[in-house]
Length: 259
Image (cartoon, rainbow, N blue to C red):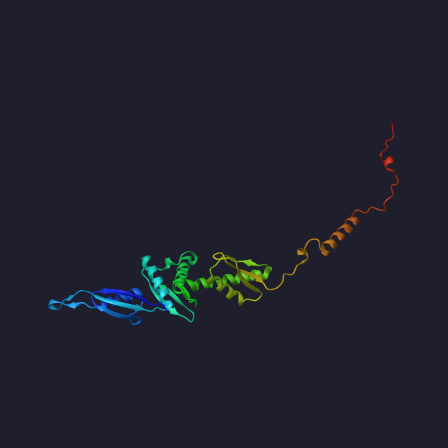
């Protein structure tokens, strides 16, 4: 269990509590406050000094990941809000805002990097893995549809040609989409090969390829029969009648009669 403790100073106790809620990225109901010092009333009822409050926060893994993403947005000077949806074994953090589309990056590479770091932050020193998915402007759903269409197209060619096909390297999230799509298609199977970040999906046919006559291996019975047939055919074409026997010796063949 992770407990975060921090002291906040404000003009009033409520001001210090509001600062704690803003820093932890949650409402005050999830924070335990201990008032260390309160402002004193001075002359004419004016407050003297400042309020000092200790805040104890026991965040969930989703809260830790969301706080990490929120700090990144602040560093990038992006105005956006987060919508966190907790699931059975993970959470989806959706970045909302008009100017947050640029955080996606080429083919979602920037979004994937933020997702990876947020996952590392919330799963630190914990054996039970909590899956984090970071999304922006509905990119994940659009990418999922594109990958499913790609898997169907590649699988169709694999079944038609009977040849294995390799896709470009993908992250684990996208590879799972490909595997899921291929598993519902007949005649094909898929597996992942390689090391990160170059690990990719291989789609293979489940049926063994059938060789046609023109595709048979060289040196087989088919080629031998074909050669024999060609030799016999050539003999028939060049047959001009019965052959005469040549009984001359080599000396007689080489002898030249003098003039």
